[in-house]
Image (cartoon, rainbow, N blue to C red; front, side, top):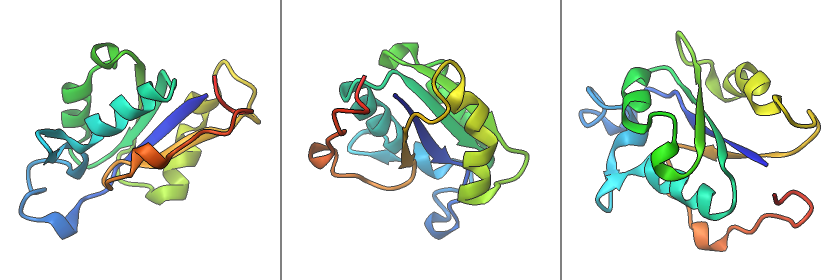
Length: 128
């Protein structure tokens, strides 16, 4: 199973914090929020992650790299300008379906919200 983290937004409600930093890179409990997501996805057994980005996206790529430091593989779906949720997912579909059955489910996470990861359980038919 693969996962996608949505990280393309402008983060306007968090200004001025997001004037020079994409919202998913803002620190929460000592590390970027998106790093919390990546670590929890890896803990769930998801090792292939697609991240879309637009606003200051180069900073996300610089901070996260290819994912090796987290024990996963990260691919990026760069958008010249944010395509909104549906457009961002559609744009990333080739990365999400590469090497798997195109009908296979993927987990979708908003990169700028805190999740109660301890309550998330993947259905057994989509694990692995």
